[in-house]
Image (cartoon, rainbow, N blue to C red; front, side, top):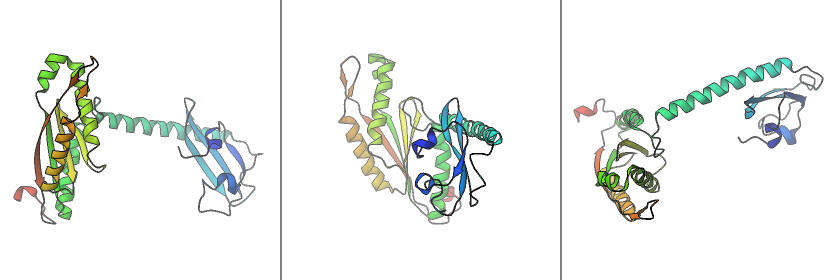
Length: 236
């Protein structure tokens, strides 16, 4: 991503002269290069990136050099990169709620510890909203679990429109959601909670059956603002 199309179309290592018009993107701070080698990183015919070597000597990388070793190096790097990407995806999937795309309870608990530590260190306020969908069991019993899933997704989408990118949104469990709000005092958290409550109640959920279902949420607020440098929040 972010590379010029000619790089993404490479299938074998390319060696040749450095041409500023074509290669400046790869070396934005170097203007005295003489030659370079472009090693495309591919797995399963998917372009993952490019490994680049540059030299001031215009004879260091030429079209007359063999590329077997460089091609092998590119394959090894591509396998390592693919493994790193797959591992990152696996870790992410373990911390993400499949239904809403929000973080899950496990991630929230980890992030809560980090934000509490930061609040202690900087003396910054930290608020948390715990949100529950009213009468959700009735939705499942009356309209079915697919309708219930749709309600949860719609509420998550609605809430996302009201929060900041720095806020942590998590599905706490079932029909419960949690919002972790760094640098937010209790009065500001209350304003946000009311804004979310109004937004959710004002957007009925359209079910696949054609029915329009009005939903509401109840929201609790917790906040802390420790003095800077406090070591233990339990002492407050």
